[in-house]
Structures are given as C-alpha cells and as structure tokens.
Length: 178
Image (cartoon, rainbow, N blue to C red; front, side):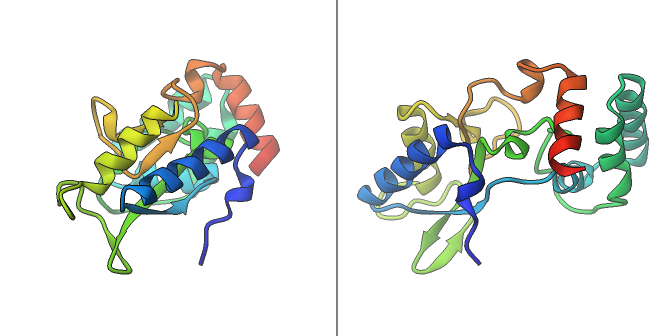
C-alpha cells in the first residue's frame, strides 16, 4: 500500500520529491512508508519501550499544563511493546503536522533497514540524509541523540513545541484529529 503524500504541506512536497529523485540519481531508491501520523499513532510509538511510571508521569504533566487532548491520546492507546523509536509525545512530532516523512531503502526490491550496510560503495541512509540536508530539509539521521535515519522533516526546529505553545498544539491536534 502506497503512502498518501498528498496529506503533506505544500512546502514539503516539492523538496521531498526532489530528495527521492536525487537519491535515485545516485543509485539509491528510498520509498516513503510513513507521512502524516495521528497523535494516537504517535502515542503508540512513544509508549513502546517506556515504563508505566514514565507514561503516567507524562500524562499527568500534560494534564497539569492544560493539554487534555494530548493526555487523552497518550492514555487511550494502552500498553505498547517494542524498541524505542521516538522521543516525541503526541502532537510534538512534525508527522502530525504533515511536515515529516519516513522512508526506507529498497535493495533488490526489498526493504533494507541496515543503516551501516554499504551497497555499491554507498550507504543509502547516509546518502538520503546528506541529500536531505542539501535541499534544506532536516534529517533525523544527523540528530545527536536517538538517530532516526528514515526520518526527514521540513523544519529545522526539532519539534512543534519549539515554535508553538503546548496549549496551541493541544487545540490544533484536537481540531485535526479529535
């Protein structure tokens, strides 16, 4: 099933298309698999790998700060299991805003998830990250902690909370997804 890239903001669509084309010109096929993600999906990803004390603490913090909808998202998805994949709480990832995409490397028609494997002398995820930065996008592979090689985003701000208040984020997430 193809990812619906039409849900991305207009300012992101063109550089993303250019990114995929530039990677292909270098022999690297990158395929989008995740674009807009609901705050409920984000909550599932954030909850996996976290202890119940940390989860209940974050829910309480969100409520204390007036972010009732985001707290509801985090609480309502229930227990999750898996490896850590994000530090972004619901609403605090550019995925919820249509300004981020995750792509995987395709080798011989199959998904390749290794971020260290070289193919024809190139590492696909490193090429993807470098080309993203050349186009003015931000690459999760270049982050200092919890590197996210499949992730690219439009903005340089790490999270919406760097440009918007938590109350504004909560209201917009409720409007879009509530």
